[in-house]
Image (cartoon, rainbow, N blue to C red; front, side):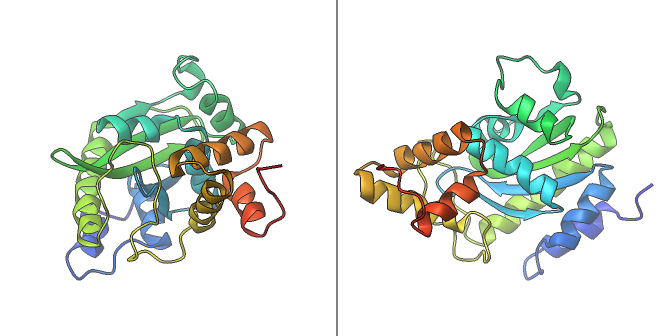
Length: 231
């Protein structure tokens, strides 16, 4: 049984609080009896801002690269997306995500929207390496944490998702962003190829998927001019 409580998780999210951290994310995973947690913005500034471990980060990177998965669906629709066994998930729903997640050793994924009324800004995604159902108590706890995260992020300047598939620099309140180079590379590709930003991001995603590379690695190669998609 976790020694942490919901109050331990929501306390840092109050106005003036320090906000989440790696330790906060690990405590969140322990409370929900999950193996990992990730918090990501979705929409104009798609960005992974907190995560408990590298596996959680790679899971979110996979969804970001493919544009599909429980987190993407959750953020888009503003509703829960709870998948207790990816091996049993319908293939046509997430044809690329499911095999990719299973290859990473992830079997169950649960996504909770960060929303306030009609405002949607992101998603809290938790996962386990074994197939499992989520207890009602854990769902209630995750929803409470998601609500607190939403208010905290809106207070930090997070922008609502527009739904048009574009990309722009993330809010300045967040530092050391994992996908900073992705945003930079998107702008470079947009300029080089004369494409809208959302189309340039699609080019990055397609190259990453076609070459079985993390999108962050493709972006780094573009930023350092080791890769030019014009060629």
